[in-house]
Length: 240
Ligand SMILES: [Zn+2]
Ligand SMILES: [Zn+2]
Image (cartoon, rainbow, N blue to C red; front, side, top):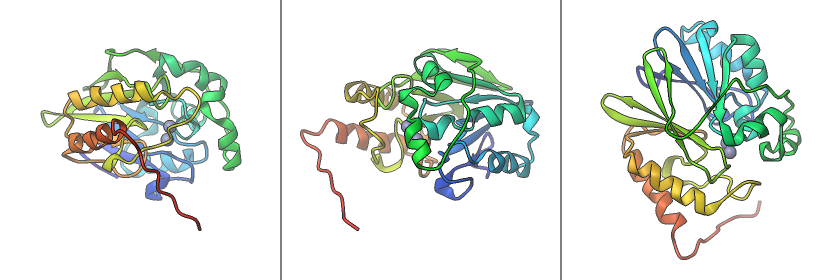
């Protein structure tokens, strides 16, 4: 599904666009080559590659798959997608070990509970804050945003003269908080990471779950900032 001239949705269970367990999977079109942002939870690879083909791309020109962080729903497809495309797996250095070893931070037990099984894949390159990465004629900049996991990585790109950010699970639409108490989680780091994202004043946000935002993304980030720095948090739940 085409979102903008450069960004496509290639998968995502939340959109019924690939198998259950998949986070949103984006394709960045750099013209001569493409990159995927995240690879899903390990059962949607065939759907993702079929979507890529339907959108008119050759899977063999996907040269990179980024992982925004090490949780299973973002890295489960690494092994299969690498096999199907020949792409490089590229992650932030702080989450590398968890991804390669299916370590505690990847939450593999939770994946198994949900019926997701997958092999781990070796990482081909690791990135750090401030690194730039080229996908064809698209330039991406790495923003290290620890909090949700120690190695959460956002990717900044320019579209139509304004900032767009692929933010994984660090943020999303409407300030809806994600999974906040897993191993490696740090609320203080997450608060600081959100302030950094706000400082880029992004117009567009491509999160790991739920809807993406075509404009006014900074307003949505400010809701997180307010929630996370409120003197108390009300947790509302329901039974049944
Ligand atoms: Zn996550
Ligand atoms: Zn996720």
